[in-house]
Image 1 (cartoon, rainbow, N blue to C red):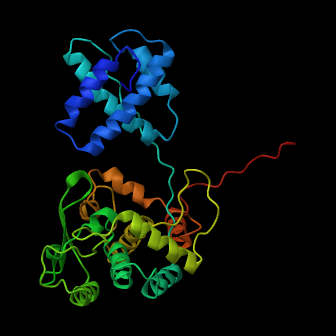
Image 2: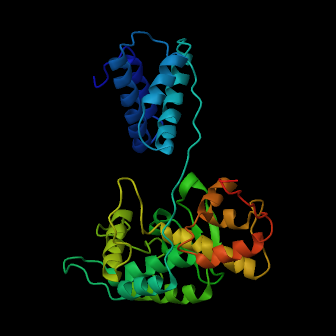
Length: 328
């Protein structure tokens, strides 16, 4: 038995129950959260079968890591608490904590984007790589850049998901299982059509757009991350040393760049973006408006023109304040 606290048997039974109805990935994440709680209870000397408010709050306070990570652990533990309550062990139901995010994405300049596509279109890999990576990598990047899709949902696209007649892409395997249909610019459709013809999948509806090494599988996100890392090195983009947990230039930043450019285009057409405007959140597949709000955080050093626009808008709103001389 991997658990050692007084609730070891209940934890094992609960995990066995979940394994019958939930995915291996979900059970694994639940197990890790429960192992953390079990270790704390064992070290704490806890001997009961009822998780009190004090015990759970002390455990939450002892957790390290980002608030988002802590929140995930609490969510998994809440499921276990429901199980204990169903057994008659009336335990405290912990509240989730408000996740904080200070993440600022790396916003690629237009020149950096040109460099990225130049090296993507001329990338060279190992000779034993059997698939057409010279075609796959540039096409993936063009969809990420031109459509603002997530990497995972992009890699799982099949030929039948692209409707060349109506100019749309159907995203089925998405975060939060929120299927959506997105429009695609005609210039990208032309490139995508040529890609499908060259790959020989135009008349194969179930074929993956981006096949992996294994037959019947698509290129995994980790492989695409490796290719993109090579491209960033060749383009000499964001090669600084990062602190632990800090993120720099990456594939996901293309989605942030898409949001920034989409906002600019909508505003140039006379359609300001407000949080009650559902157009962009719906396109991005966000569950809540605040999820889209997180994509509107940019470094002023990277987008100085946006800062200039804001300063012009806010001119005169904040009065000048004269600070008296300390000697007075």
